[in-house]
Image 1 (tube, helix red, strand yellow):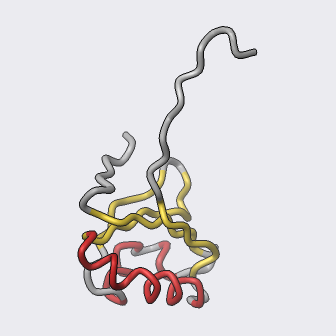
Image 2: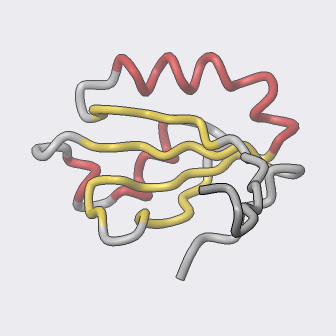
Image 3: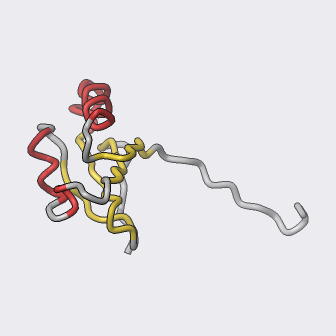
Length: 95
């Protein structure tokens, strides 16, 4: 089941952990390093990718520190801020 995201109230991060990361056994423990961070769960079938959120009022001031800290963390391979994207409906004649 897809995660229900509310970008009006929260900022979201997808974090990919290295294969030998201690966070793979307890991904929710990452929240201890960043006050306000909340664990949302695994992303689909990808056991090494996990979704985290932070209330928008905290996220706006902590964003750079959180992203910078995660990018320097040896347990993290990749971190991506999740931003809402406008979906475009295609018509049948666009091919």
